[in-house]
Amino acid sequence: MKNIAITSLAMLALLCTACGNPGEKEAESTRTEASTAKEVVPEVVFENDYAKVVKVTLAPGETLASHQGEERVIYSLTDYSIEWEEQGKAEGIKSWNKGDIHVHGAGQHSARNNGNSTAQWLAFVKKKAELPDCSENTLENDVITVAPDFANQGFENEAFRITEVTLPPGENIPMHSGINRVIYSLTDYRIRYESNVEGKGEKSFQTGDAHWHEACKHALENTGNKEARFLVVAYKRANE
Image 1 (cartoon, rainbow, N blue to C red):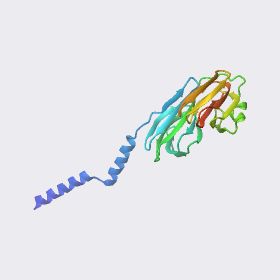
Image 2 (image 1 turned 180 degrees about the horizontal axis):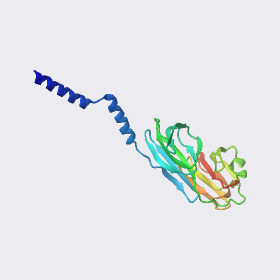
Image 3 (image 1 turned 180 degrees about the vertical axis):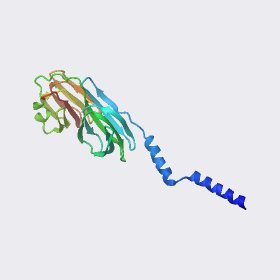
Image 4 (image 1 turned 90 degrees about the vertical axis):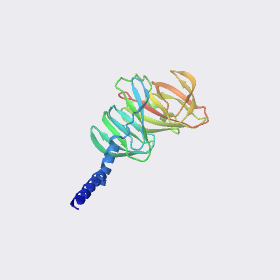
């Protein structure tokens, strides 16, 4: 009888060991999930000596690994919520809506999508190379000045000015100044273009295209059958 009791106790101990503490197993599962969360590599959509444009897409639970970032301005392509860490310090949950713009200084940072939808944003980075001289071209005669019905200034600081342009089919923007800038296409569109640098021509762009223009005077017309929407991200020199 004594041997039966000992055997029963041994079996019970084995069962307890196999089952473990449910709370501990759940915590361990959470830790494992966190440690194996997919790390996403940002997509470089444009880069030259002066500027870089990076697109980040994080599905729920995915992370942007800690890395060094330069001075940059962020444009949100979707609504999203992320856990943000900067210079090794947790900064809590940050939320933005589609079309929101904010700025970051240089520094180490990381992010994790803690929401239920895809987080997607653009980072317009200003590199250290000195920007080309803009000559007589200034922001005082830019697209906002000549076409206020089609252009909306979304952000400006000492380094950047971001303007969103919405140009319906058949409409045009008259000759105006543009400083060094990246153009990012928010829709597919086709335009007729005239510039004192490039001359005349017709160009087509697709959603997500990014290209660079140095300072010039230019005019454009939407020759397609779709609304043209794009960002004009001006990179400012001192005193511009």
